[in-house]
Length: 62
Image 1 (spheres, rainbow, N blue to C red):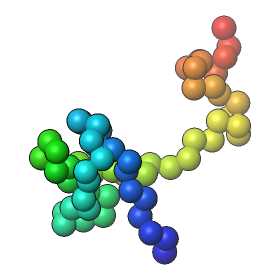
Image 2 (tube, one colour):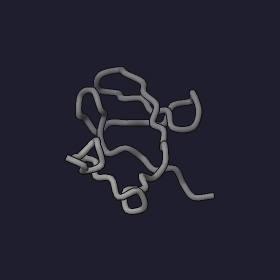
Image 3 (tube, rainbow, N blue to C red):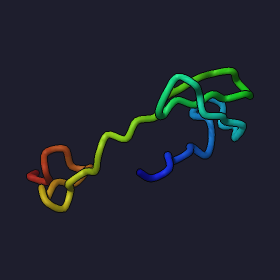
């Protein structure tokens, strides 16, 4: 198993003073704004396989 990826900055205040939380995998705490948050990887987008572009919600069929 690989090491967990760490966020570079807090999504709320933008500070870099982050610590892993004891709440479990993907949970982080920001010392600057005293907020806790969780990050979760959802998966990879298969844009090349479907032929759909993220900018064109109808698949580019205009």
